[in-house]
Image (cartoon, rainbow, N blue to C red; front, side, top):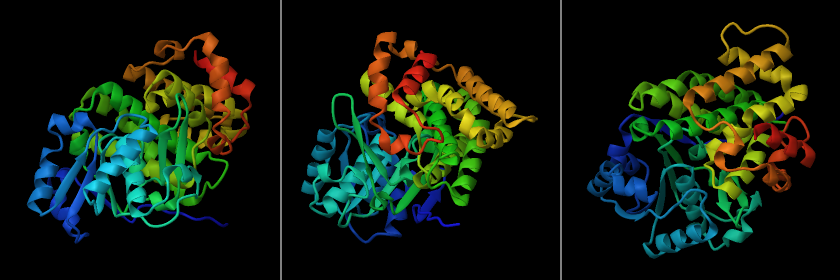
Length: 383
């Protein structure tokens, strides 16, 4: 057996950690100028007040960049980099959802050297050094705090990924209090996104290994048990912390055993119809699993034992139970379950299928080959 496993070297799990962010970072860094990358809602809502006060009291000079938007386009990244450069940033902190953390990764690279962003797209194309990087998620979903991937919107409906070990943060801080009160729909969509990460890592055609398997299994168990409690009571701290931990473990898993067709088919939904990433994944998840079942039933059957009480029978029977349980969970959260509900029409499916075929980085990891006609049929089933 031969494999390689990488992850963030320091992970802090502590409710309330954001309120002592200043001294926490002082334990690791001597620098003084820090750039905090976030979004306007978080900044204006007062959620960051404790962290900002703590940073100031610990002697940090903070530049807040809060114009990050979902699915950030290139110009947002470049504008943020210029703003951070003018402030003389020495440490980059991403605090927010996946988009804020993805932009923070790229700022750390862009400010650490002179490589243009356009040269970084793809796998292993980042060169040079980066600034110190700390990530603090406010949703339990993307796992971006522990992945070496940053996704940028590069066209009207297209996204490109920067994938490099250089994008692993130096530290990830999980503070469940930052996720309290997240609306049920956002909790559900991001939570199911994290479950997809665990499922696709466990069944990835390439780079699947015993460590990623262990993480994926634990992640799926935590996420499936706590998704509904977190949706039903937004202030259930124990459920929120379990979701945050599960999302991080799933992130560690898929950072090493990469995701596949669910994500490939989700990207056109998000890019063309501006549907949040987690919801896009959720809409195609059961249909991709059914398509994959002929080649992945043995592994889906193993996962079924985690989330379906008393699950037994053949691999096919357990796979059926697994998919049904995931559909039940989605139904119980109340989020959209069909493509029609997010504005997709029959006439859109061919274009979507062609767009999905461009996601070769992801499709190559799928346990079963996906052709354009297969993608079209999956979309049709999800309509």
